[in-house]
Amino acid sequence: MKARILALMAALILLLGVAAPSRAEGALPEIQAEAVVTGLQNPWGVVQLPDHSLLFTQRGGSLSLFKDGVVTRIADIPGAFAQGEGGLMGLEKDVDFDSNRYIYLAYNTQTSAGPEVRVIRFRLTEALALEDAQDIVSGIPANPSGRHSGAQLEMGADGILFIGTGDAANADNPQNPASLGGKVLRVTREGEAAPGNLGAPFDPRVFSFGHRNIQGLVLFDAPQEGQYGYSAEHGSWLDDEMNPLVPGNFGWATRPPYDENVPMTDLEKFPDAISAAWASGNPTIAVSGLAQIKGAHWKNLEGAYVMGVLRARQLRVVWLEAGKLIREETLFEGEFGRIRGVHMGQDGSLYLTTDNGSDDRIIRLRPAGE
Image (cartoon, rainbow, N blue to C red; front, side):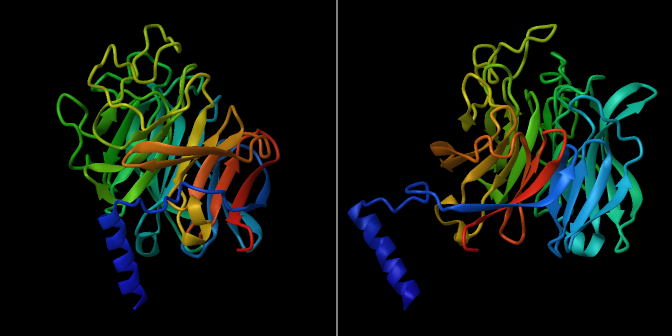
């Protein structure tokens, strides 16, 4: 009976031309914040495992687990090299973690040919050991200083891994078809190119190009009209961007040697470049992690996208409809310092990592009263 009434109401709305109430309207719910892990140094990625424990990285090279109030240091990742913005960064669990226990890590490392960013798959045993290391993608360009290392990871329900990379502060990388820098990559669990990427002359793993420094990825449950989700792109002096995850050119190309005073999407140089769904404008606020809020308990925040912000030290919340911005808000401005990672947990909580350099925290957010 209730379903029939709701259907009749929806039909009346369509007949009368009355807009349905938008979740982007009205006052936001009160949110309670709790620091669940403290005393960290530059935590970056955090994911919640099926048992609701938290797996997290620290940029210096460590992988740890928080469970039942206790932090267990699992491993210091061999070869992880922390310098400047680089180190142990991206983290993702496999969508079939329950059966294969795969996790994926992205980090800077030093090789005989020079620095690079690498993505490696491990199996995390029940005893919390890392086994069966396998290179998924290597040779992602890295700057010796660690600048613009990108290295965000997100896996879709189909088992395809998205990798957001930085341009390594190199003017050539974003528009170079052979370079893996300044790109979104899509690969299988084994690191093979996923179907639907750009194809020749691009490296077959390249899905989109013309990016500066992708530090946030969020995927839809299933692609919507060819779009897989959104990325958050840490910007130049002029702006930051939130971009649709679709194939194509996103228009970042500096003038050599490396000019930060050009638009993130240069439509004069690239008239066919794909425009951002959201941009911070000038000055940059320095966005990082990205998540979509899920769960009716979040009320009108449900469905909104939230970005961690470094320079402006806040959470930025944006509502999009049909890929267009309809509202944005700022939360917790200055309360936690620099916010790096943002993760929507399976328990309905939103988890943040701070990146202040000392006494950093993992913070759990929930609507008050939950």
